[in-house]
Length: 104
Image (cartoon, rainbow, N blue to C red; front, side, top):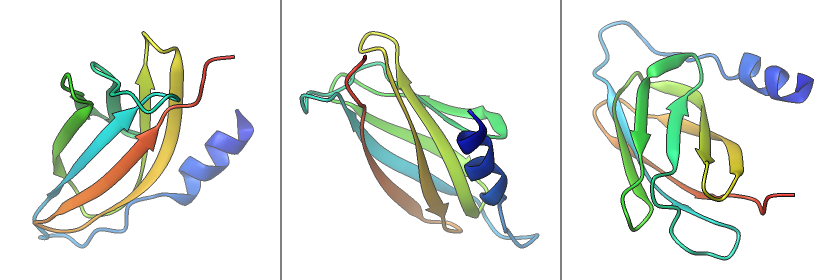
């Protein structure tokens, strides 16, 4: 878990006051490439910014402050999780694609 903490500490947002928030749009799949319906995504450090994937694995997180963020994505059904980096831009949608690893 120390490597996760080191990654997260390096991803402190670098937003400028007054910038408009953006959004994160992405698709989550399992290790077999199937949509991870009901997978959850949360911005590390901002637990109120979260989204749940639809039946096709798509999710949207709105109101994301501009900057570099770590996004934790997990799916209880697949028992998989991933930590990904995304750069949120002001007043724009930033995209991510996540393939959850196969559960051990």
